[in-house]
Structures are given as structure tokens and as C-alpha cells.
Image 1 (cartoon, rainbow, N blue to C red):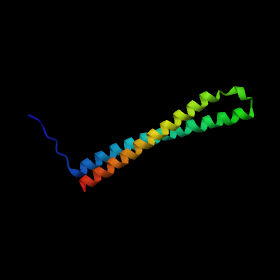
Image 2: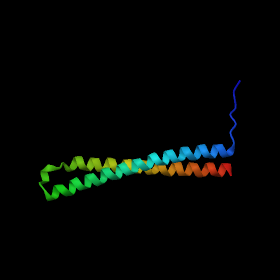
Image 3: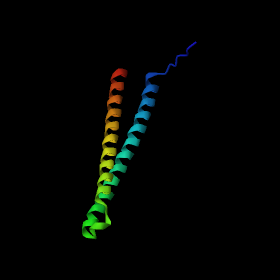
Image 4: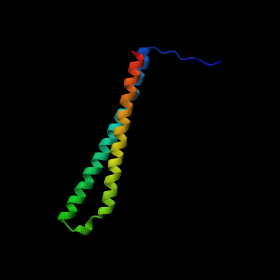
Length: 94
């Protein structure tokens, strides 16, 4: 016999808020990580022009910058989707 789980709307809101905050916190951490990678790569590239140009492989650095950009974009999309889901949930519960 299937069991049905009954929780109050208030409990559901608390649980969904906690989950949304966990997702958004993780996403924000990923965005900060990507920003840090971009900044470090930019510093290495800028430092290469002042020092010897052969000390930095520009193709490798560009690949790193593109990967960091993609990581930032993906995390921003997850953040946006979590926000949209939370708004829809609040509309349903209202």
C-alpha cells in the first residue's frame, strides 16, 4: 500500500527555501571560482607582455579563460533557473 506523506505548506516552504539557498550558495561559489580563474589568467597574460613573451603559452591561457567563462555562464544559468523555480513554487503555494 503506498504511503502518502503529508506536510504542511509552511514546512514545505522552509524545506524548499533551504534547498534553494543551498543551490544558490553552491552556484555563487562556482561563479566566484570562475572569476578568480579569469583574474589569475589575465594577470599571467599581462605579466607575460612585461617580462619575456615566451614565459606564457597564450593558447593555453586562452583555453583557460574560455573554460572559466563557460563555468561562470553555466553557474549563472543555474542560479537563474533556481530563482525561476522558487518563484513558480511560491506562486503555486500562494
